[in-house]
Each structure stands twice: as C-alpha cells, then as structure tokens.
Amino acid sequence: QPILVISHRRSGTHLLIDTLRNNFPVSTQSFLTLEQLYPMVKPSLSRPEFEGELARERMIVKSHMDVRLITVPFDPMAEITEFVETLQKRAKVIYVFRDGRDVLTSQFFYNAKLGPGPEKIYDFLMTPMKNFSGHRIAYWVFHVGGWIARDDVLRLSFEELLRNPAPVVEKLARWLGL
Picture (spheres, rainbow, N blue to C red):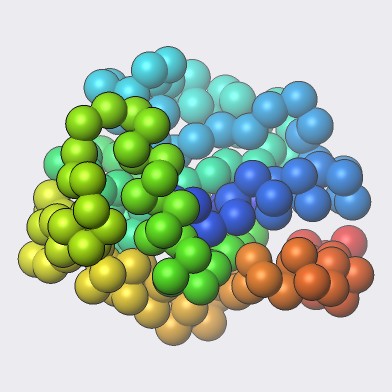
C-alpha cells in the first residue's frame, strides 16, 4: 500500500519523508513524485512506468497537488486526475502543513534563487496564481483548508514534528497500521 505525502510547497514534505524512512519499513531508495506524470516535468514517467515503480515495494509518493488534484501551475490533465483519484483510494494519505507565514516567506526566498521575480515579498504574495482565482495567500488557505477538512487524511503539523517528534511517529504508526 503506497503512502501518499501531500503538502503545499515549503511545508516540510522532505522532513516527513525522512521521518517515514527512518522509522518504518518503506522504500529507503527513493520516492515518487506525482508531478512526474506531467510530460513537461523532467524526469517524467509514463503511467505504466509509474505503476511499475509503485509495485516494487511500499513506496512513498509525494505531491503538492491541491484538493482538486491539480498542481499549480500545471494545467489539469484528466488522465492524471483519474489516476490520482484511484491512487488516493488505495494509499495511506498524509498531509503535512506549516504556518503559512513561514511557508510563503520560505517560498519567496526559494523562488528568488531560481530567477527573476517580484523583488518585494508583498508583490510576491499578491501574485495571481495560475489555475486559481486568487493570490498566493488565498491559495495557501485553499490548499491547507481543503486537505485538512478531509476525514480520510492524516493531518500533521510541521512545527509539531520538529518540536516533539515521538508522538508524531506514534500517530504515524497507528495511521499506517504498524
């Protein structure tokens, strides 16, 4: 059964993946990224290649998709959405969230390293999002709110994982049935 780790960007995804790898019998070699199903993402995987990787061992799959199963800024693709819906039904889904102020500040500085963009954080925060009718703050609220409202998802706080990891690992063990 795959483990699907979902988060908004810059929210502790890799800390959670490392916690899973260090404490549970899951793939320690690598993880898959749902966004690899998009042909414009390199390296991309075809659906059969992705499914083959999933079949090898208990794989961790990471994504930044929002609750609509869309990864901003990619355009929705029906075949990917359909596959992800099926995957969600058989996976253990974990959503890690982080204080929005820290997320968006981290994302501002991370994006600044990638190339030209808004020079002021206010302008960055107010940038309209592709495939979403609002700015970055509204998107963060939508992303987190959508996932944490679901009953079939384990919700974990990045701050709690940092501050007091033992109870979080116990919660993960119960959720994963280990």
